[in-house]
Length: 129
Image 1 (tube, one colour):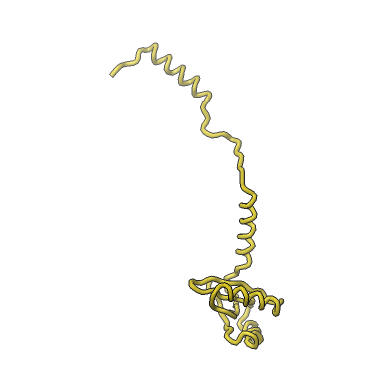
Image 2 (cartoon, one colour):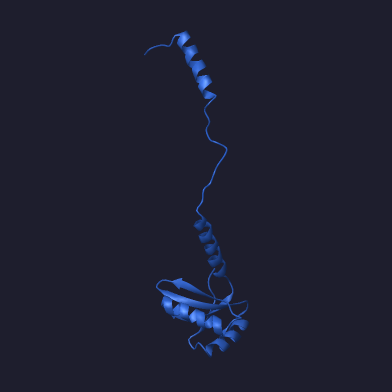
């Protein structure tokens, strides 16, 4: 192993101290370039997430089946019953149309009786959190 002479050690130390001055770990300025479509998609996702409410409230299921019929059923429901909110929930392999957002069981049963006139297979559910 070769030993460094005092002169070489001093040269090495001075070179390292001069080059250290120009080294930086990170630049403090950050430029983010983001596609416009990303923000649009993010807003759509936020809108969808806010419309899906799975909580401790009661809902009424009016349909259970394929995607196209679920969309058609929800569209018809929204035209006929404008005072209810509704959403489509996917549970493999079927799509379910849930309507309403009722605080109490009594309130939901009253509305279920009204909806059963138009949707005879409708029933009351209380989704899990």
